[in-house]
Amino acid sequence: MKWEGHETSRNVEDRRGGAGGGTGGRVPRLGGGKGIGLGTIVVALVAGWLFGINPMTVLGLLSGGDAGVPAVQQAPAATGEPRDREGLFVSTVLRDTELVWQQQFQAAGSRYQEPKLVLFRGATPTACGTGQSAMGPFYCPGDAQVYIDLEFFDTLASRLGAPGDFAQAYVVAHEVGHHIQNLMGITAKVDVMRGRVSQAQMNALSVRVELQADCLAGVWAHHSQRGKGWLERGDVDEALRAAAQIGDDTLQRASQGRVVPESFTHGTAEQRMSWFRRGLDGGRIDGCNTFEGR
Image 1: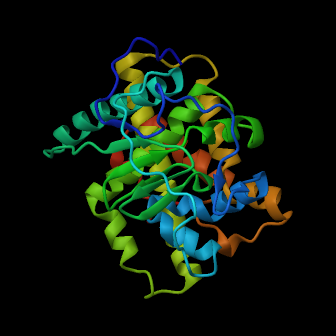
Image 2: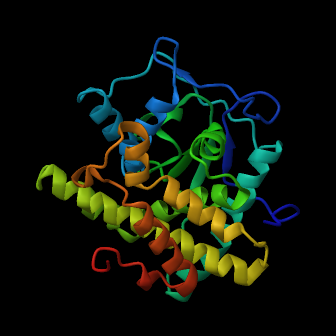
């Protein structure tokens, strides 16, 4: 992906501290100084990629209903725009999503409201509660912000088997997809169903939400490539591999050795790849109706 030299976003807040961050390869530590191992990360990803709606709901599920506040909480410490390579990459991708979605909303007679993106380490306050690294990247509709601890990209590459810059771009675009859903009122419509339907039905709705965000990420990639031509051979495969590696079936096999379809919240590897590909090939928002499509 030929991303260097392109315009960066003004909507990135760097809370990592220091001179522009850098991840340093540390294992994030939360709550009483306990290290977060792969098992915890995978479990958090299986349930926690529901973060497109409310991260604290996920923490509540993982902790038996009491999300609480972790022992380690990082206060906001904005340092302006990121200056390290990883931060600049995310900022560049975010800027391109802004340009693409501005055009798409304008074509539909509407105005696109850009999200903010926060880079953090370990834990950080959000309007949805305390965001934690173990949850992976997430979008909080309460403050319309995407939150990313860049160590997730190390996990994605080395532990989940999905390396590559376009795999990372897919993750950013997926979270921005949740912002699009929020602007369109989809997030609120799904969230209001909590408590009104069974857990199995809520899980099924969550799958539809996540697959739609995958499709919207594909729509972005379609128009981004037409505008910039910055994708290289193998880039699309990187995104598809990432989608497959964070499929519910893939993660469940890795964490527990078996698959429980009724507990899926994000969709299978095949579904995630299929919906991303549908958005990429078609480039149309109306082609991303996962609530009616298969």
